[in-house]
Length: 370
Image 1: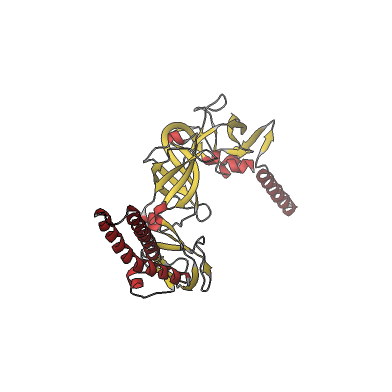
Image 2: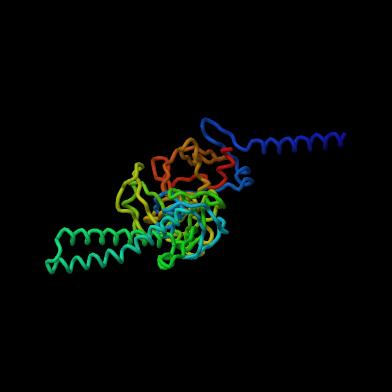
């Protein structure tokens, strides 16, 4: 008989415990009820909004970029077939380093034209000077003098133009004048940096409109952000920027506003803002990475609650305000307007239901709303 009594007693206790755990929250007339035991076991805390220092921020997005003078697209003004290249994407190159060799018989035609004009120019120059002397001595007509002058100046202009073309192709004009022709040209790096794009293969024909490869000098990486027109008057040079690369990591990086654009030209009514990067940060980033950034424009005082105390539903924000406390705690879900955010706190704007004296659930809200 005693054995049956003990079994019945233990069963009753187990049932009571399970019932208490099951009653994690009770909703009564829109109020959420919590017992003292539940409050303690779930480590919930009740507190009031506390005055905090909040940073006023302007949210923006953009990318990791480099200034135009440190990004180069390598092309050729006279096409050719790719003869040789040993470079791959990611290779580092120095300014003036040989990048690629092109071959084309058109290069020979250009050199032939140059030599022909070079040979004519000496004769035309002497003829022009002779006619000038004769004209000054009134021995020849003005017509002959002007004709000789015109032919000489035309040849001289053609000579200079062809010479510049040879120099652009990295062909030495002096060698050409000595009869040393070449059907190959070597294209050199216009800047130092890393190769980010390589479009050339052996045997491929590269026309003047083709980008053979691209070089980016990652030593000059910077932050390029787009700020909306409504926020731009708050952004000043020297302000702190915090940013993340959401697709790559959760690490937060620091920058400072270096330059602020002076005109609105884009269709989306934005202005470019540029930020500096330290060498350490540059080593972790790549040109073209998308970033999300906060520009800290000011600081202010405000009443804040822990971030976990705010419930967000359908783009609206709520807190659980203590409605009454007798044998149990009763909380009411109250809508609030939030302001600035810090690492651990969210600013809430005081209203008729929430102020500095209001008691609300600041820890354990997740336990009651899920």
